[in-house]
Length: 112
Length: 114
Image (cartoon, rainbow over all chains, first blue to last red; front, side, top):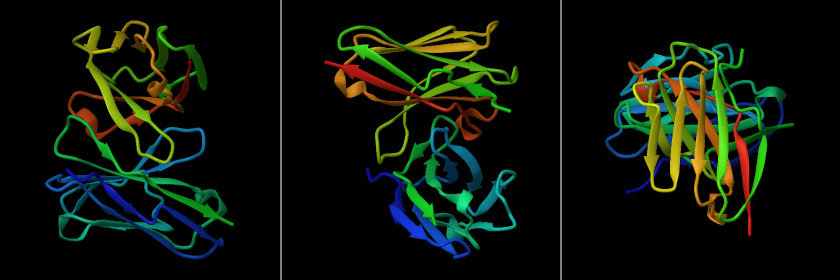
């Protein structure tokens, strides 16, 4: 069974530029999550989707961050414009239910 | 406000010995706890979980202990193997949310020395 796929794996941009991350969850998983992991910290939830609906986006900085999950499968997370403090690893995860989450390898973002 | 804390950033253990990783939480609403393991350049992978109706859960070499009164849990790995070298994250949630609303600790880097 294929795992959660994320691209790109690495991204270097200059501040004020836009950036987008893509996630393909495990087939059949209705729930999709986006996390941000800062250096030396654990993952922090940004947004959770149930199919196409964002059911928890309370931690998403909505002034610059946006996300979408069209057709309830793939998802895109966008930052516009990026700031220096956005440098982090962005993790996508999916789950079939409430038992556990399956994480992708993440996208490492460096904002210069 | 760090609701889940792993106070040891790193731990070094001899191969074959026991590894004990600790985690404390402050939110009394948490009643479901998980441990994840993370290798470099990979995402975290689920290791073991425990709900508050238990005080111990075992899976092979991995055992998680929960002390609700102290708001403390620990992960024991016996015997430790070189492949256990990774970063371990403790995560907490409530039974209603299950693993859908996780709060993670900062992680502990475990190194197993041959």
